[in-house]
Image (cartoon, rainbow, N blue to C red; front, side):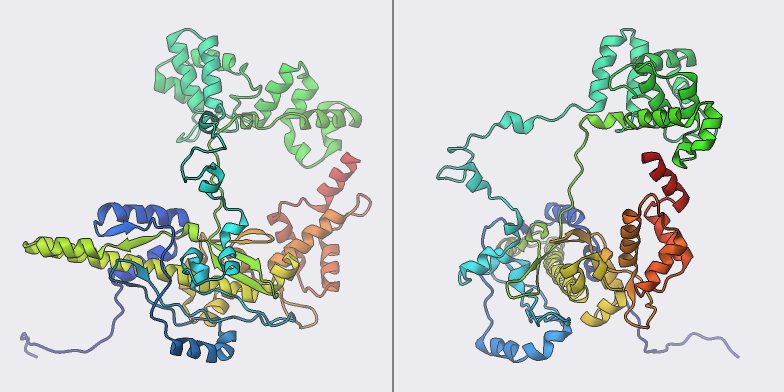
Length: 545
């Protein structure tokens, strides 16, 4: 067969992820903090994007009476479908404002409770943007009612400035607690005057974690941390040990230790209670963890009464002395969704507008600059910026709608949890939610990652509501694994010292409650919740008696 070049036409289909689709997927799985950082970067590099800093945006226009009648007619047929399954696309109007056309179909809960609605229209995503025609009751029903504060009202006075009747103590607002490193550095400057030893001390302070322990990172196996410090600083090991001995006398007592045993030994030595029996007790803390009093008595050479006294004395010590000093404040979890009980029953789902970045496309600036631009490269750059800005606005709007849609369906599926607690949590997987809202499982997985829901029972990650199923003994509805773990915890907390429940006994009790579970599953759940075995719990009860 002769080989020769030739032209052929073939028809085929392939899935291509455009940059815009990649951006939408990326935004969907970002947390609110990561999203704010991403939007800030886009605002810096795209001249056509502006931050929307207006307090109020006019209500949506263009919804005719025909649209309202159509929505009203379709309410009954779409109530059980989870609402707006088709979604809506964001557009940019002439003034550069991002608008959207939502489909706020009411949702009724399929439960023994009366049929109710989950209100989650556009006013739930952007409550302050609903316009001036909203009633006072609707305007007040915003996430701000859950504890938000108004700066202008708290500042006092007639204006929105800082002045007024209430004086703001700026000095008290700018103060902070002394950190552990700063406290140790102050003591080092007083206790050690030699420059070389002071340098060693500062290096050791840099190795102290927030709990007050010496932590050495990036060490090879078998390499001592103090030897590594001496090698790095070019100092003798004896000099490092000498500085460390001095610094272990700093306040709070117990800092600069490399292990829990050393930390407790320093505190006991400060109280002059570190005798040979106590030192032997500290060398066998694993026996204390197992509550093996008989073995402790043999090892330490004391009776059981002395062991009990030692345990009480060790319990009075501080295992993390460094935490008494201020450090970096942990960032609080900011919920993405609020779930509140509705007046007529059921639940209201709203997006937290504080976590939604507001960006607008500056069409006027684009028209001005593009009209004065003659170079082809400049026009191409402006066109790319405009397209990127429009896609960002659309992606942000679609992200908000998707989070709201998934959250509504989760509330529908887990209505028993919101009404009665963890014991009524139902088994739920991604496929159930995806099928209900007509989305792909991967989309639901991205939406529920790093997103939190604020409820009357606390703040939960959306992933919390997805649990595996455990079958029922009578063939009825399956039980949620999280609900079963909660039941095991309740049984253990309620047991008495004279009647400790073994894993087999817990299995029997659960089966009487209609939960078909194996003993190894109970043991796995118990260990995951850090609940000791029945033998260890019996020793602990006897010890505390």
